[in-house]
Amino acid sequence: MTIALYARRKNWPLDAVTVRLRHSNIYASDCAECETKEGKLDRIERDVELVGALDGEQRAKLLEMATKCPGAPNTDV
Image (cartoon, rainbow, N blue to C red; front, side, top):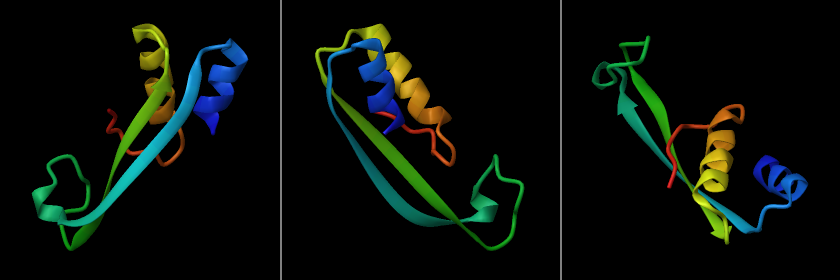
């Protein structure tokens, strides 16, 4: 929603946004950057698809904004 509102405000040609999420569990001991080292952790991967005649800078800015949304994992298409 934030991405669509931002694109609309900038008058950028964003036609649609599709977000796909994948959930899995990983062992904490297998996660190099995690603070917790015991038990299992939830892992959520996200793909963001932007549809429209966006240039490279516009697309990069919108994907950057998606990463900054609260709780957003940092995986993009």
